[in-house]
Image 1: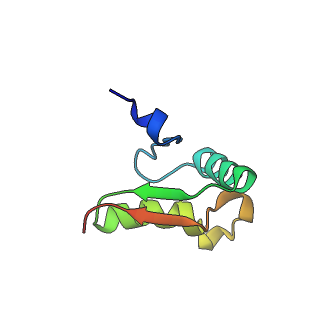
Image 2: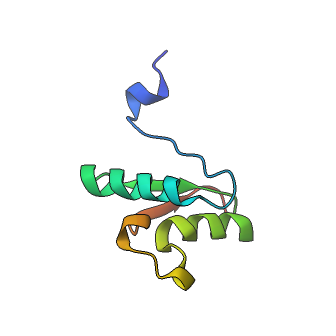
Image 3: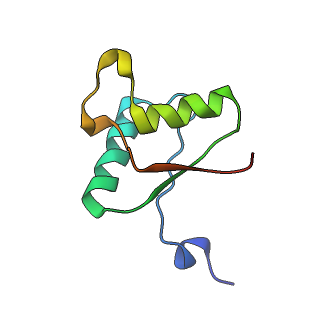
Length: 79
């Protein structure tokens, strides 16, 4: 049986709630450097939306730089 990674080369990052700055910077760097699609798998509730929006848009109240956002993030999961 083929492993998931053999079929779909990927990187899995867990946010454990609201993502920290280091996780968001790492994901942004990987996405920009390798020009790969980024998919977020989260719950379809307010908590899941907050998590994905932090990865995609950052914290607007802090006016974070482009180094901490991943604008090409696409949501994936059940509605």
